[in-house]
Image (cartoon, rainbow, N blue to C red; front, side, top):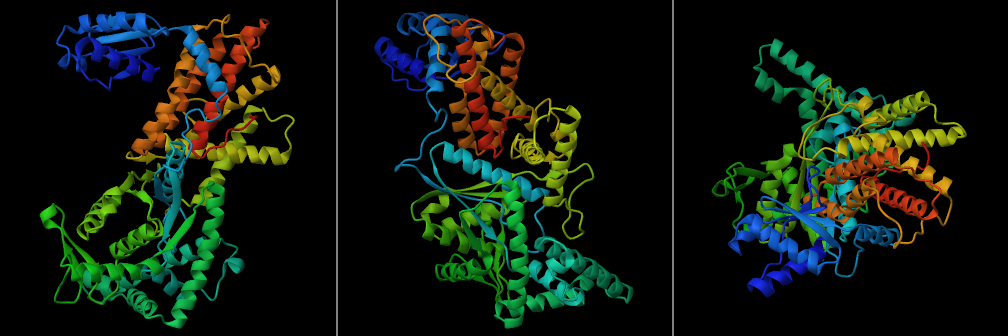
Length: 590
């Protein structure tokens, strides 16, 4: 309807005022006013200098005469509130019911190719709650971009080398007694994470011993023997020492096996993997290129830097004096490799927490200075951290919330609440367990994704599984209720005569919400924000439940019944699509 109004208004301004106007501010009418769509007149006063109310009335008279779907209007100051006929919404429902792709844009030969990076963990510890937000954001943004018509590839960079990896390796050598995931009864990533924590505990003990012997604390942090062992191991790794490489491959294999199990439970996947152990070498080549171009420079100690102070940033280290690389080195090489692998790529999205905002400003600027045209197509999807009531998580101290443990808790909470509600009659034990997983994961994903990515989250597992309010289970339950109605109505009960049915005002409100779905998907893609989808589907569910409570669905009049069943089916379809964009399953029964 917005497109139809825009077309007629553009024609009017051209014919009556000889002005080219292609964009109009049209938005849903606020609830306190009569109308369905509102045209904001104020921007048009620059084109046609009139009193706001006079111009609004002029445009309202034109639309009533020219557009059959416009049945009336009213003017409130500089706002033209337009009333759309019931016939339009009745026909809209029919079109929606016949369009399985409603709201989505199919991928075509002209679609942009985009790469979305997310997860990107270190191989020295299990995934935790912060990784969950990263994975859910990256996966959902990928879904939304694809629904908007982009050709999306999902990827991650695995940080499988560096001092943090060597810390776990050294600790396993010193304290592990050849322990394996099988002998320990632990997932591989959890076992390696255990030794990362042990390293930190031993490191702190050695610092304390050195301080007690009279060494200054700052020097003690450098001289601690176990840290020196980790640094030596990193140098041996870069020199391809066979024993170090063998241990590294073994411990990483344990971690990858553990990660795969966690990703499967989360319902996320990747089409390609990049490894820092490969890309850091290409990063070193990039450093050499920057030196030859005069973009980088070498200090007296042999370290390589880039000076970005004229751009409002700072100097940035690219290679240490001993020749070892840093994160920036790896990221430069990875970016180049990805564009080599995807020469048709129109953009890349990095899903990384906001503590790395400065890092990505530097990365993008360096790539531009190196002369890569595609550097302007890079986007950092920056997001806030996730906190718990107990405070901030710290990996080295072992106070993180393990992703697997959290998913176990979500499953258990969903099971407890479902059993308390007592609506599981007739379900097998396997069906119940599947439902608990669906509800628990839906609660977790929705609770995280409904928040604007830029905002910090205080996560409360118990509140997230509430069956009322702005939660995943509340939306899932509405979908299940709709499926129950459709089962009762039976097949072939959604065909109605568009010329004889009429709309209840609650039905019209629901249809107006349905009409906003395509624009919401487009806005979510543009803003990289699953929160827009989450809050849209919550509003849709609220409107539908208000309708359901007031208007009987399965009435005796077959034509009215068919329209209402068709409306229920359409709402169910859009709920399922919305939840799907968030990576959430929509159950048939709850």
